[in-house]
Each structure stands twice: as structure tokens, then as C-alpha cells.
Image 1 (cartoon, one colour):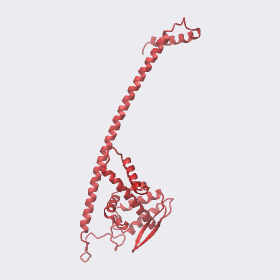
Image 2: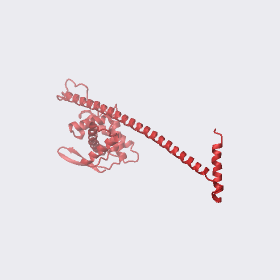
Image 3: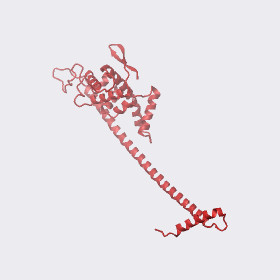
Image 4: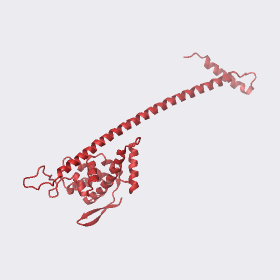
Length: 288
């Protein structure tokens, strides 16, 4: 897919050309984003540059047959992945909230794809969304993007927490020094609201997952019941066919035994005599 991203330098908009990425490269990049953003050792206290340096190093050191990519190319590509997957997540979440009766997970995904395509080009990053959708860091990022309307660098604050005047490996102090600058008013309150909202979203998601599990169980129970009924009907049908075949056989044997060998054509007499002897032998033999 060819595309680009726009970066802001002062008041001037600069178009940054984005190289082609295959689906495998997108998956490789997305997995590295998840790995670095969820690493308990380095996922906090790092500026955007340090964060993407780690992703770039990991991506290129394990890229296999794919071409080496620059930090700018990878971050620009993931900005595109992030934007498209966040939009698709919004459509998917809307469907989960409605929770249509009888709609499977696959049906809900198909409906979200249809809604996405109805307003813009088809969604082509399902391979990335499947990796991201259940990751808490990604869910946090989607919440921030949908609530704040921030630009890409600000959105990255979900996992890049160091202030811009510190080094890549220095975390923000937990308490300000006596001579330090005070935090902007309302910052703690804003954080508390954001975490409260995220917690509510998680609780709501848990409820939805439980409801989906119950619906899926009911669906499986119905399918098992229908299958048992089908098997019972099939058994009755086969038994009926067996009885019909037995009746036909008895009727045919009776017809052959009633043939008068003295009056039938000589050409058929030997055949019917052998058939009668065979039938009489079957019923004369002692039952085992």
C-alpha cells in the first residue's frame, strides 16, 4: 500500500513519503510495537525518539528477507496503521454495544468491515488489528485517541511518559523537588478521570464478553439439540427403510415359491427350481 503521513514543522506542513509495506512487514512492525510498549522494563520513562529507536532496532535485527527500514519510515507507517485500526475499532465497538441477537463474532467483524467501507476505502489492515485488539496498551491508546483528538505525538504519551527535557532512559520523578516547576493545575484530576473512564470501559467490556460467552453457549446447546434430533430422525428413517426392504424380500420369495415349475417354460424351470431350493434352505436351516 502506498501512502504518506503529514508532519508538522512550525506552521509548515511537510509531506513525508511512506515506502511500501507488505502484510508480513506490517505484522512484524505491529508485533514490535506491542513488544516494546508492553515491556515492563522500558515501557515507561522513554521519549518518543527512544521508544521508536527500540522498535526500529528490534524490527531491523529480526526482519528476515524484508528490507531494512528507517525510524521515520516505521513510525510513519505505524501512524497509518494506528489511525486505520482505531477507526475500525470504533465501528466494531459500536456493534458490540448494540449486541445484535444471534450475531456471531465473525458476523460482527463483517458488519464492522461493511460500515468502514461505506464511509471510506475498505479496511486493509485486519492482520494488524487482530494483533492489537486485545492488548491493554492498544485499548488505552484507542480511548485517548477517541476522547482527546490529539495529534500522533501526543497520542504516544500513552506509553511514552518522560518529559521532553529529559534523556531517553530517565523517568519522570514521582514527586516534584522543592525548587521544581509545579504541575499544571488539574493534571492529576484529568488523569484520575481518564483512568476511571478506562476502568469503566474495561468493566463494560467484561460484561459484554460474558454476554457473548452465554450467547455462544446457548447457540452450541441449540446446535447439539438439533443434531441429536437429526440423528434420531435418521435412525428412524433407516429402520423404516430396512422394514420396507424386508417386506419386499418376503413378497418376492413368496412369489418365487408359488411358481408352478411344471407349467413354466423349460428355459426358466432350472432357474426357478434353484431359487426355490435356496429359499427353502434358508428357512429350513436351524437358527443360531
